[in-house]
Image 1 (cartoon, helix red, strand yellow):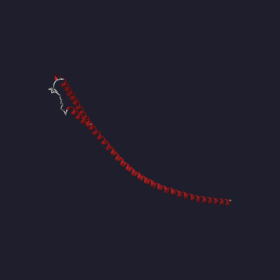
Image 2 (cartoon, one colour; image 1 turned 180 degrees about the vertical axis):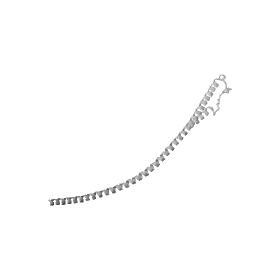
Image 3 (cartoon, one colour; image 1 turned 60 degrees about the vertical axis):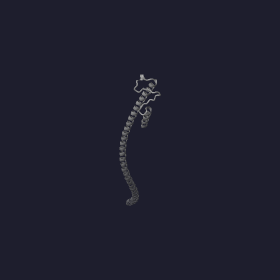
Image 4 (cartoon, one colour; image 1 turned 135 degrees about the vertical axis):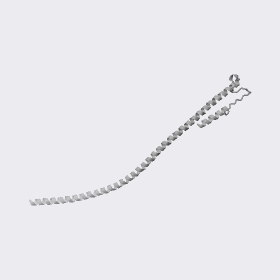
Amino acid sequence: MWWLHDFLKNALADLVGFGRVTVTMKKQSKATIKTPVKDLNVKETLDHRKIILLEDIQAKMEMVIEVTETTKESIHKEMSEFRSEVNQRFDMIENVVRAHSGQLQDIEKQLTGHGRQLTDHGKQLAELKSDVKEIKTTVKHLDEKFTEKVDDHETRITALETARL
């Protein structure tokens, strides 16, 4: 918006001769800006109207410049407030992210520990499976021996019973 302000200021200065309105007439005239319109001739009346129009344009341009300046200040104020609000929000978000990052690191350490424990438990489970397999083999062997002995005893009992009769 600063460029608009400078442009309007320069255009206004060019129109009114840097704050002074000068009218050049080919023929010397005694008329001034304060001369009543009824006392002016046709050429002076036209020049007078031009001066009035230039003064009107100058007033409007000054109003535009003032509004532009006010708008510029308002925008700067709003941007400053917005920037402050956004910075506060980013600070809050940054703090939350840092806290969560710390928590995630703790969780990662715990998971690493749990992973080691699972590996150890896996090894222990493999050992237990091996032990169970050995026990099953031993039980099967003992069962076979027991069955042999029971069969042997049954045969002997049957032989004794038959011999007694």
